[in-house]
Length: 162
Image (cartoon, rainbow, N blue to C red):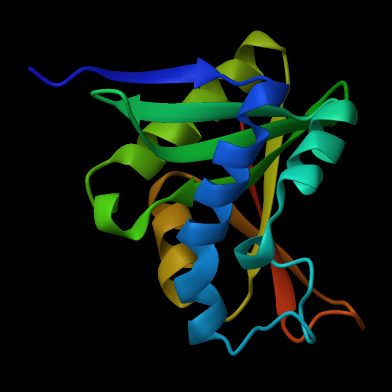
C-alpha cells in the first residue's frame, strides 16, 4: 500500500525544497534556453537561501511525499485578503504524469478556500503551451501576458476563481 502525504514544511526543509525546485525545473530551462546569465532567478537555479527568504516573507511550502520519498512541492503566498499565488509547483521528472502535480494544485486551492481567498493566480512562461493546457484542464483561466525586461520570455498570468 502506498503512503502519500502533503505536509507543511519548515525552515529545516530549505535544502530539500531547493533541490526539488531546481531538479524539477531543469528540463524547462533546457527547453527554453534559460541559463544563469539570461534568467538567474529561474527556479532551475533555486538555492536554499531563496526558500528561506520566501519563508521569512510569509510564503508557505508544502511537500508531497510518497512512502517517505519527497517527489514534489508547491508554495502558497497571500499578498492580500482575497488573492493567493500558487508558486514553485515542482514535481521531479521521473514522478510526473502520476497525479502529483494535480494533488499539489488541489491542495493549494483547498487551502486558499479555507483562508477565504477568492482568486488564485499563477505566472508561467507564456510559450509553455503544454503547461498552459494542463492548468486550463484544472480550471484555471488565461489572463494577461506581460513582458519583463529582465526575463528572456513573456509571462502568462492565469487565475482560478474560488
